[in-house]
Amino acid sequence: MTEHKQNKKTNKEKRDGLKIIYLLGFLLAISTALPSYVESSYINQFVDIRFVSLFFIAANLATFFAIIFFPRLIKKISNYKTTLLVLALSFISLVCMSTAAAPWQVLVSLILLLSSFCLVWINMDIFVEGFSVEKHVGKIRTVYFTFINLGWIFAPTISGYIIKTWGYRPIYLISGLILVPFVLIFYRKSRNLKDTFDYKKPEIKKTFQSVWKNKNLRGIFFMAFILQLFYATAVVYVPIHLTQSLGISWSSLGIIFSIMLVPFIIFEIPAGIIADKYIGEKEIMTGGLTILIISLCLFFGVKSNNVILWAAILFFSRIGASLVEAMRETYFFKIITVKNVDLINFFRSTQPLAYIFGSFLSIVLIKYLPLPYFFLTMAILFLSGYYFIYIIKDTK
Image (cartoon, rainbow, N blue to C red; front, side):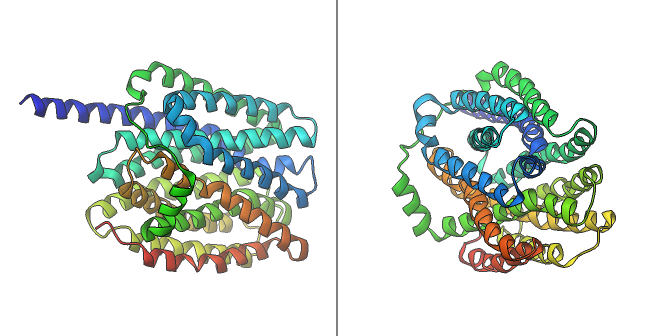
């Protein structure tokens, strides 16, 4: 009887902890998303478009190395304290971006901004995994990402309005202000969020070997890389293509981007529940990948500047992305535990690696070909995803 009550109490604590994390994820997503779609255009004000990619390469290289050594810091001072540390760095970097007056200042601020935001999302991953129940991982992860995507839906419209009214700089200040309620809630609920786990000692070489030798980890790692490569393509180059090549205004673009993110709200939770109860992850992931490949071909082929048409194309692309994202999260966090902080970090390193790869590729292609050919190249590369889905074993 006592043990049963203790289990119920533990489950209640987990539910309460998840509610806090869902709210924090929503706030953090708004802060992250506000500057995300305008960063390439903002940097383009300081340097030629050919050098924009170099800024992102430098920032993501720094992010990658920060991720590699992040588990050691988490193990040393706890996930809770490292979260507070990187939030402070995020706030400082946002203020610096808003006041930058020279290219080198933008570069330093961007490096600090991208790396700190990436690290704090790793902190959030660890919190979610700590409160998760194994048989409901798909539902928990997709609910968490739905709250995050709600934040992303609001952000583009807000960004578009701010740019039209005041320009780019206030976006970074507003993004920083949104971190204030996050920190207040985070500090007030510290009792629920304090670390209770004995994290495994991180070893970079062993982590890499364990991922490479395990075909399930290897397959889902490369699928995560492919999805992040799509996001790199979309966030950095689609705004430039639509505004500069096709002449669509930022006010229209903000609305389009908000519409395109709706699939993340509609499809991810049902996909997670279906993966938990019925067919597993592989079939859903295959469908999502197919939609992404078709979408990239449309990015390449469609020359119209019709706002409704592009809203439909981008909406369609995010149906695919939402399905792949839901299955990426569900599958990975079913086959690891919260103690594997080194694997979580390595898994999240796909984001900077994808941006680095995508940026190098874009530098080569844009030098000789129009920007739309970058999207066609991505579509061809994404065909490899079918192999990586094939090699993983369904959890069902």
